[in-house]
Image (cartoon, rainbow over all chains, first blue to last red; front, side, top):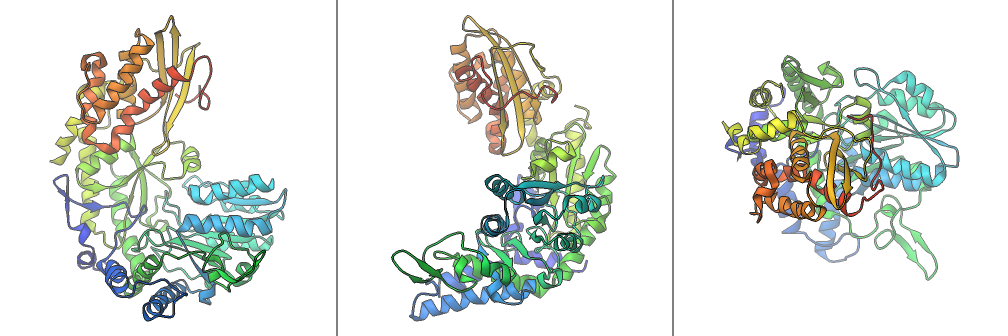
Length: 413
Length: 157
């Protein structure tokens, strides 16, 4: 293994516990990841115990320390994703908020009646509904790029869907269901060639692979802290300065203003003009600590580790009779997300059975109902691996699936 | 092996109901009908009833669900067919108590559905068991002569 996951696990005390009489195997990382001690320490001891104060508004010492700590976190995030300047790194509640802000603010500027917004069939609900709402209010058209038989974006269809009328293209970098990595550069070229911007939902990519927003040359890029070892309630909206400059804030209030008159106000400069109210200071600091942790490991190492795990477990899963894996069957096209079903068994029953074996997976529609319809399934089970998972975890998953089949009578019912 | 705990949840009677559900399908005509889903997981049930003289004369269900929700729907239809509407509504309450770990007064009325008491130990699965009973409740209280919520997908067996 490229990373020594067994040693890393000491940084994640939560993993060392027994559930339902079995040692826990946590494979629900696409939903949220566990947090290393360093992240929790930085939030609680580094900030709340020593420096707790509001940011950007006090002259006293604690306020200054809190502000420095908060803005240092922004700088860490900037460096992590390769953005040119911290002005382009906005803190939000998470990917969902980031996408909503873009739809509401940039969408307000860019979309006229009859314009097109293009997404794909593999999007998470948070990259569908903000665009549905925008399309409805502007009488615009929401279009979907289809998928190939093995669950990759159909680039030929992308070329058809993205037209001169398209103003916004919004695509997941990695599917939260299929685990497939999408060719963002190719979609970007199609979008830019038609004068459209490209928005990327990076919730499932930034935690798992090196991402450089300048090299990708995308207009907007969104991700969440809690899926990359950080706390919940903090996320990032990266946007190119030129776009953010012309956009209006979505929320108004304290912190984001320059001058307030009785009838009119002016906004602070970027990035603060978007961040109304007291921000999630501890969350941002925790995210900064998560970035430190990931950078120390090296994102190429994290990616290689997951690759190795998927290459190890995918053939074992595919060898189980009656087990279907959705999406590409080639490990090199996958992140650590594997979605599957067992013949004749509903994924909820599978997930309950795996839980009894100590293995935590997700079951359901994964906030991707259009994709479920496209795959013609009502729900699936999903195992998702991360940097602290080991080959032993993969073996435990396989054993638990075999035991589940046995319990329910070889899938015969 | 920890899977043995599952025996509390998946007893043979329950597995029989889920693999061979009773009153499964579509009625040609109905007086009350409803489609209800569990947005947390995507399970969906379509329920149709013929209510005459304040009595449930016939009932059928279809949809997509896990073994618990399918078995529960099958048991529910067995339990309420031929019952007075008021009695059926009473059973909805009794079943709700049962799956939350409480002892209902008239356990026997629930028939096989009483077997689902083990669900109480699996909090994440209580909603699977109660979906069909919630659908029954709404079909009886709101659904007379009309489709209440959405529409029936007759092609979705």
